[in-house]
Image 1 (cartoon, chains in turn green, yellow, red, orange):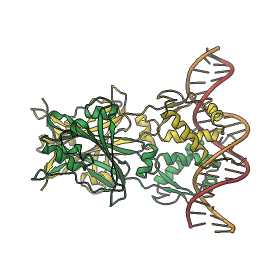
Image 2 (cartoon, helix red, strand yellow; image 1 turned 135 degrees about the horizontal axis):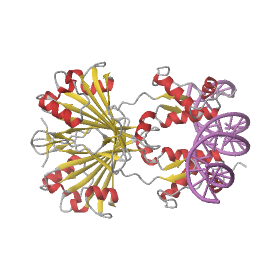
Image 3 (cartoon, helix red, strand yellow; image 1 turned 60 degrees about the vertical axis):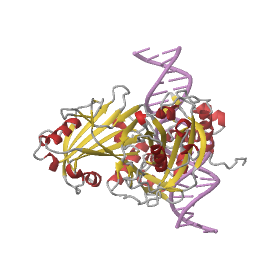
Image 4 (spheres, chains in turn purple, green, cyan, brown; image 1 turned 180 degrees about the vertical axis):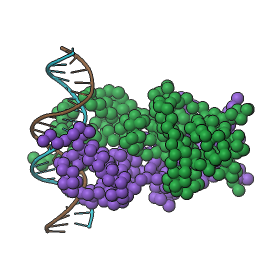
Length: 250
Length: 250
DNA sequence: TATCATTTGTTCGTATGTATC
DNA sequence: CGATACATACGAACAAATGAT
C-alpha cells in the first residue's frame, strides 16, 4: 500500500489543509487551532511534520503561536492606522504634520556621518557630518510603535537655530528652515523590508511582520535636500496616505 | 554533562554566532556560508540545531538557501527600483503615469463585487458590482515583477466608454474619465505585508520578502471615488516615491 | 549521457525543558 | 501541584537538487 501521493512535501500538504480550514471558516480569527497532539491525530503524521507545517503558517503571518497556550488564527490584518503624510501650513506660516504620536523615551541626539544610502538621499557624499535624533514613539489609540529619525547635515544647520537645537521636532524644523528663507517642498519614498532583530524588539513586532519604511526629504530652493527624516513602523498595522495631483509635462 | 550556559536556546546562540560572523565581514554578501556539515563541526551541535539556526536567519532575510547548493549571504537589500507615483498631464489633456512595465501575460478581465476593504476605499457598500482587470507585469531593467489590478464600479463605467472597455490601461482610463467631465485627483495608500502563497509564486518572491501594496483611488468632483487601482510588488526591490506640497489649513 | 559526491529537504523517533492554566 | 501545550535537542534514514567526473 504505497499510500502517499506526490503533490509535494507532507508538511506542505498539512499546512495547506490548515490554511484551507482557516479560509473555509472552520477556524475563525482569534480562535485556537487544534494542539500539536490533535493535529498529529487528525492528519496521521509525526510531530516534526506538524511542527514544520505550523512553522510555515507562522512565517506566512497566518497564525500566532503562544508558548504553553496554543496556536491562534491571526485575523486578516487590515491596517488599522492611517498615516496622513500631508503637511499643512496655517496663515501665520506655522507648519504642522498632523501627528498624534507620543514619545516613549526621551529623544536621543548624536553626531554621525552619511552612509551610502543617506548620502544619496541628501545629495551628499559618503562620510559627511550629520546631526541625528532618534525617537521611539507610540500611537495612543492603537498602541502601535514607531521609530523616527531626523538627520540634519552640518551644512544645513550652519547659521541657523538648528545648530544649537538639532533635536527640534519636525514641524519646528520646517519652521526654522522656512524662517531662514527657504521655500520648502518634500519628497518621500516608501519601502518595506523585514525588521532587524533590534528593530523587531523596539517596535514590538510579532512574527512575519514587515517594517514600513518612510524616508522624507525636505527640500529648499532648487530642490536642494536640506534634511532627511526616516519613519519606521509596522507594515501590518499602518498605511501611509498621500494625495497626488497631476503635474504638467514639459 | 550539564555545562550548558543560559544565554538562550542553543540554536539561537548558533544563529547569533553566524549573524555576528556575517556582520563582522567573515562572510560577505553573495558568499556561501559553510555547509550544514561544516557548521555541525564548527559549533559542535546536531543537524536539527544547525538547521533551526539557519531557518531563523532565513526568516530574518539575512541568508538565502538554495537546495543542493548551499546557503548564501543576502547582500543588504537597498531597493533598486523607484516607482515614481507622479501623474502627468500634457497640453492636450493626455495623461501619463511614467510606467515602464511590460505585460507578462495578457490582462484578465472579470466581474466581481466589493469586499469590505475595496468597498471602503471606493465609498461603496459591500457587494456592489465591479469590473476587475488583473495584469502581471515585469520591469525590463531589473526583472522585478508586479501585479496590477483595476477595479471599476458599474456606477462609474455607466454611460462612458469604460462600460465597453473596462480593460483599458490606467492612463487611458484617466483620459476617459476626464473626457466625461470629471476633474481628477488621486489619493494613494501604501502598506506592507507578507505575501499569500499565490502572490509569492506570481511575483517570484524569495523568502522573507514583504509585498509593497499601493492602493490608488482616482477621484472626481467632490472627491468622489471613481476607480481603485492596486499595485503589488517586492518591498525589498522597489520603493514608491511621492512629492508632497504643503496645504493650507482651515 | 550517465554516474557520483556533496548539499539541502523531508520524515520518522525519542527525550527533556519550560510556560500556562 | 499536576495536566496540557509548545520549545529545544539529539539521532537516523532516505529523497531531491546540484555540479563535476
